[in-house]
Length: 120
Image: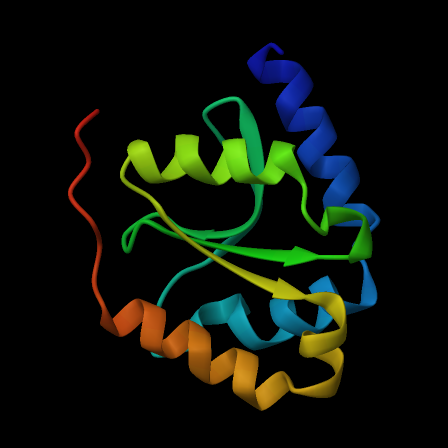
């Protein structure tokens, strides 16, 4: 997929966010979480991450039930990890039912610090 195509898809995903993604974006936008800048629907390699802190090399993915036992997601996470990113995943239902717990988990992931990339 070409970069222009990924940008168009990312824009469309931003316009059509799920309820869970809207909740997380409300918590992460404007450096609301420990003054860390997050971007949403960010092209990263051949993929588009739901939320990413470039500085902390942290990707936050919000998944629906269609992602259960997804080989695609496992391959994607493997690629991103090999590229020096940390990936944390949450179910939509967790975001909606346990927003504070998800927020705290993201805070803890940030506190762990960025990983060293072998591909930089």
